[in-house]
Image (cartoon, rainbow, N blue to C red; front, side):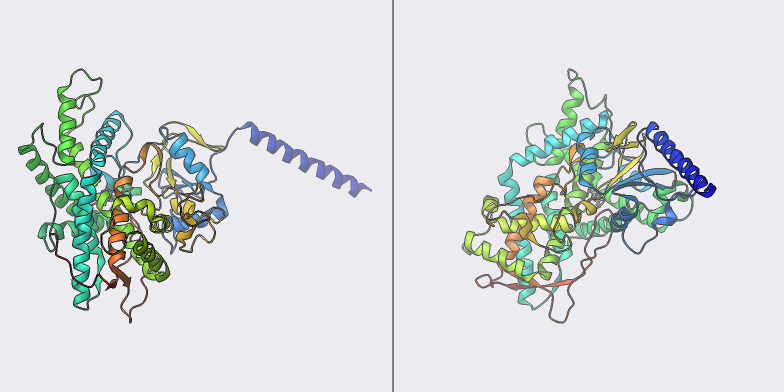
Length: 515
Ligand code: PLO
């Protein structure tokens, strides 16, 4: 009898304690997101060792810690978001609160201490700066016809290179060819100039840009522990060398533009930026002027560096992924070609006006952007004040990483997310486009949304339609299919491989080089 009483008393005590715990916990109010184990100084670093790239590891860690969790990178608290509801709260609903950017050693080297748009912290200068760039880009957006012409000329030159290779029975690495085509579009827009094949300045650009992609903003140790800069660091040295070369090139273009600048003609984006800066400097009546917000020559140069770097690396990377997936899926390639044959034919080349009548190609582009997002972790955000995400509290200064990879591979949002299926972006009838899930943000969203989305979409459409109208792409018969894993960096790039371009009937003749 006594033991039954004992058991009863014991159970009552346990239940009371548990109830007390729950009451105390709810009285404390909302909690911070669950955190990975942390050690003094190094934070959660030991628990982040993995054979997988960070976006894949962060997706995996959800199983243990939930969709939103945190970890410590050295002394910095980092919140990882893996679900679209919280991602949209950060990017859209509380966009301004989360508009900050962390300062890191490598991005400071790249951007002269954050004087650019992509990595620069949120401030009055940043807002003014972005407004100018947005305005300048829209002015060029309005001149759609000329952008279209520029892209088409590059597409033509690219197709000539493929024709020549096909004639000689050669397979080739498409990466430098695609980069040159995309670089020339941006060069034309930014500096009103372009490069021919083999141009030494272009070759130098290819090298420095790869050097930067390989070393910047990868959460390398020196970005987590800035004091490591005192030790020799090969990556940081390479980054500094590459940035030096880039800056000399940008400076040269800037000086040339300043020398023959005229208020009456606007040749390119650099002129547009110069004009906006000068008119803000001269205009004493506006509340904000370039002077008062400190928009220096450095800001202008770094912005052009951003537009140039983002414009080249991102679009080239998506084109490379598109081609990689098309090689893996000849049936998708065939379907795009059937669509092109029936809607455009062989008597003319595709133009932007055809976008509405080529839904399968557009769906393919959307699917490529889903399955291999260019920047799977976007660029980290920073909370500018104490705030919350869902029911979690977030302290001012916390870094927030949106794991776009998790959003785009969420099994609850996408059927078989690992499978490449452009059809998921088509309506039931197969003749119109849809976005089947809210868990899709290839260009980010909100205050920091990608400024080049419209240009990128035009380029992807025109380059792919021109290539696929004329060629069928594959790997040479003895070669394995290209890897779909990619190399993680500030952008997720496919690894190098060679491509055989077989001319389609009616397109066997090489066309004249545009350059
Ligand atoms: C690419 C290499 C260039 O040499 C410098 C550069 C500038 C802007 C960066 C870009 C790099 C990588 C892609 C980035 C872009 C700004 C916005 C874009 C990070 C590093 C993305 C995907 O967010």
